[in-house]
Length: 312
Image (cartoon, rainbow, N blue to C red; front, side, top):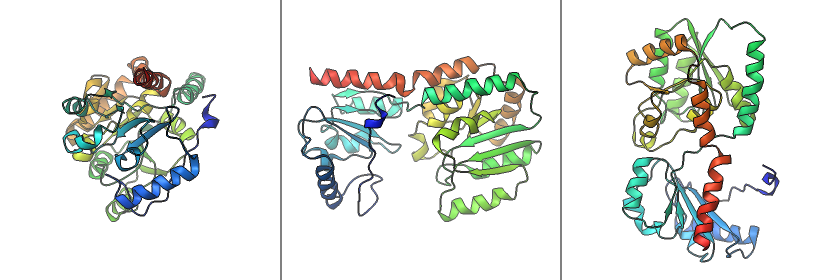
């Protein structure tokens, strides 16, 4: 984006993590830091965007700004209803949460489907397509995953079972393992599997190249409260590269079937992976269209229009 150089990202100093909400002391510290960084900005030229958790203890002090709430995976509109009126736009991650939100909130809403940098992914896609056309088909079959590797989110036992059942494939895990004891345990366990390759963390510009190596991509999420409320960005990243995907039954992704395959147990995972290898990229064009439709290039104008509606 030609205006990207005008965007500055700042991580404030807070005393405790803010996974769900800000306590009063953290809210006070954040207000001071915002004032020192930006000066007096309570005007209609400023947008305060709360990401993942509500910052109502902060934003209520800025009466004239446009306020956006982008709630995370654990979002309960009924429990948070007293805080929601502070915001002009709320963008939940799933249709279910959007429906629940509209029961308790009358402001502007937009379903957030996240997305990826289309220009970056499309550039790598075009380069890799030309490369594939000029080389022989690779012999190694690769199933891949990109993202943080956390035992709270990922069914590592499922990955281990897939690796054991399909010994002729390679499973590539691209991303950092979380430091908690359970995640570290599974990192050690998966290293014992000869056909599992742990690639480690890569920078965002390297993500499309990593995905381009995959024949089949996976989202092997546990079915828990955290995951049931998520909208995995990796599906759109896989799709932008035209790579077929198999996922656990995550509610936000069900609407993309049959272009996304859903697996419920190890038998169906193995069967669908084998079918995906045989079918190849039959839905490549459709998958890339899905990714393009939720890219920032398409979504940001919708947010701008909502802000303009608030201003009139």
